Length: 89
Image (tube, rainbow, N blue to C red; front, side, top):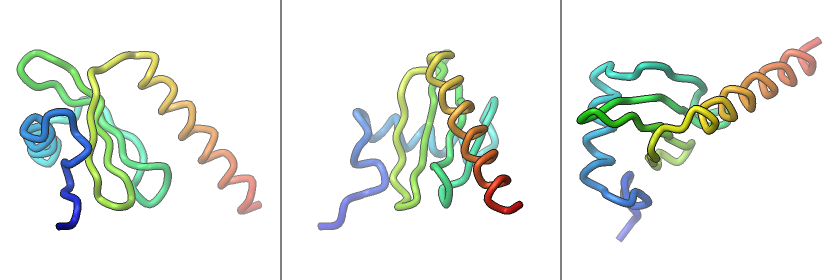
């Protein structure tokens, strides 16, 4: 059997709920693309904030929000975009 989209989630049901909330536009913030370093967003569900991620293989994961984690994700993307810009010059 092939691995499922939520197979790596600690709680697959919560993973599915977070993915649904994301698809319904509940993201407070988002960055990236699955074709780059991955897609990341902040989603609040049942009063708890999560960082959700999807990779280029379609796998979905999440963890409880921590501003340092989000800041690191944003910094990695800023560096990535800067390198892409420099390569295009």
